[in-house]
Image (cartoon, rainbow, N blue to C red):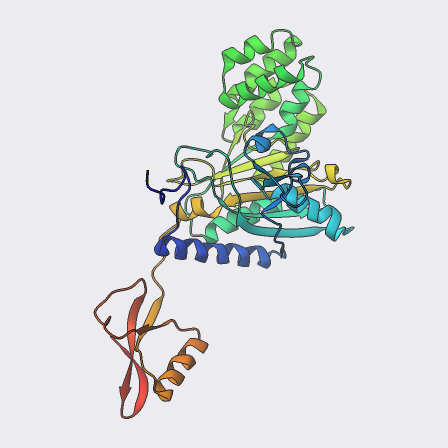
Length: 382
């Protein structure tokens, strides 16, 4: 095997794709800033207990681990930035009111999330801390939608669920931790027969509700059906009411519901959502409320946010035209160099043609040329 072969699901990003990804990254950060979100840059690795505290087994299995040669302690390469941002909010900022934070950087996964997924996503996310009301959930949903629109992703579908529904149903189910994990897996797979077997020792009403939950997916009528068939538990009723309120405020968005959806990380505690687009093999965006995420850092704060992989978004976003550039000759003359510098200060891309390479074509679309006319350097259309 060649020494230059990269590991499975790891790839170089070449100029055209890299340019597309970078343009999207800038648009997403600008969109977050328009909403008032401050940029933070957590480290790529940190002590394992800090990185994984309270995140559940799924994130633990996705995390590369190594030994710090300076301290001898175990460290991890982040697989998700949300716990790090929660630590920043809890320990470094320690603000009393609402805090809006965003981030963008690579994360590493031990295994790809799908057959065509990368193990090195470029994760962008936004989170709001300090507000328990649905206004924060709606702001995050709206920002996520606007972020995909800024990336020029079309036909976005929003799929919603709420972690409190399953939690409320299973709270008094008398199932042990191992059986509960199996129930979660069966719900995610919509395996009704497995659910029936796993819940045979649960109260009959709960066992039937789990069976019903598998069928509760589709348009807004799902919420009415859920009110009819699910037990009238406070957690269930609150979750259904909150989902309806959020969906009613997403003007113009295509909204569906999957009340058994448990995909993603274990720290979700309330309304959650996924966003899809044509051409994407999986959700482009996942987010929701996770009020417990900061409690392991000694400061429990209401929190809601979302994240996405810019590489996955770029794969389905509209292809952007090349930015027009100016071709210029290479030379040592002060007047030529001054003309090139002035154009670059104006924000123009100026590509100097090196001697002997006049006939080569490069990445940039040069629609103009810097030429000398009447003793002056001027830009002319090619």
